[in-house]
Image 1 (cartoon, rainbow, N blue to C red):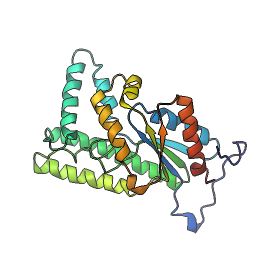
Image 2: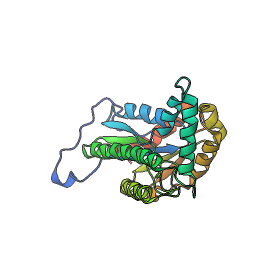
Image 3: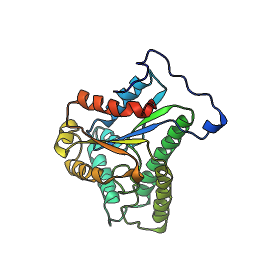
Image 4: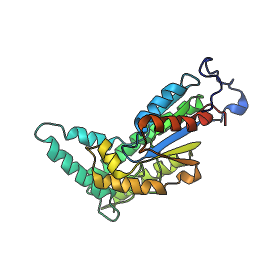
Length: 250
């Protein structure tokens, strides 16, 4: 692991001279199937590196899955409502399937707007010299999966839904013009992911595990780590990769 001061001295940001105004602090993105450990590892490593130089973690997922599972815990109506919403979401994600109505499209679009807002906040943080480690990262290579545009896979049923899909795609295209300095792919098989996330759908985990290998993020540097290994071992390897990028020692 490469460190420059072992945390004994506080990080001092360079003076904001003119030549540095357009520069951005480093960005490392953690991607992978649900259950790979992205959230916990990005949070812990960000906190550790923050002791050496200002570093923050940002969640760039939609959060829609967790919301659906919380809805499912509502007494009496929760399970039925979650099943209904999950069915509509699955149709929206399925290539060639008709997106089930304007209301569903508006909900998906709303989640994408929230993601775009978090992305802009992340970029503003980098402009202030604060390094960033993200949990997930938007992409346009695979619609509806792995943080791709949610309305680009299904078939719009009317002009309004089609307009929303085009607008959403433009948001994602704007976000993907920003390439991470490093993408760390946490690779985990579907069964291991299900053991760690028993409330998730196995078929969805299988699809995510298969498609994560296809993402290139516009040619950004990508390193794959076997996330089936014990948590502390995976975290140590992620830290080894993050240090030279975040601390500028590479």
